Image (cartoon, rainbow, N blue to C red; front, side, top):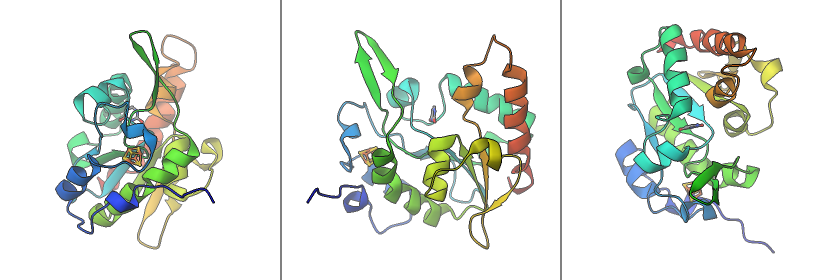
Amino acid sequence: MAGHQDASPWVPPSRDLADLETAAHECRGCELWEPATQVVFSSGARSASVMLVGEQPGDQEDRQGEPFIGPAGRVLDDALSAAAIDRGAVYLTNAVKHFRFEQRGKRRIHQKPELRHVNACHPWFDAELEAVQPRVVVALGATAARAVFGRTMKIGESRGRLLDLTQERSAIITSHPSAVLRLRGRGGYDEAFGELVNDLRLAAPYA
Ligand code: URA
Ligand code: SF4
């Protein structure tokens, strides 16, 4: 029988974010740790009421160890400002905590994580939910939505409203800032950016 591998052997019982992040540096829950520079755990405080969830760290995030600091992060920053949300007031994390890429010469090309990576990394996400206990969880894109809901969600059908996650917790599904970024300089950018901002505005009262 194939072994079921995930992050749980590395997740400590503590729900202190610093303890979790320290332990995550040792995680071998899937193979993604090996070619990556480091784990990119999260940013923000456990007191945050809004948790934003991305897909996985990108090239810059992998190098610097912080989520959403590269080009997609700048789109997210602009969208948060437009939605009147202070980035410092939210908790930012990713469904998968190591950068998945393909090396082509000197370039590292982003590769979408597979479902098994999302599942392998999920024990970290569960621990973060327990640590932060956010009122609202914002899933940025399909991979994040998969991690948040545990099943495939259609963004187009789910966005634009608060969804119930539990009795005390709502969720919002919106597009990933990278998907918006890809439209820059083409038709559709303004509309896609506007939709992202509108979805984020739903979280503003809680931030
Ligand atoms: N894209 C993500 O989903 N997360 C990051 O941290 C950076 C880019
Ligand atoms: Fe562990 Fe997640 Fe990194 Fe895989 S991607 S090694 S499960 S932290």
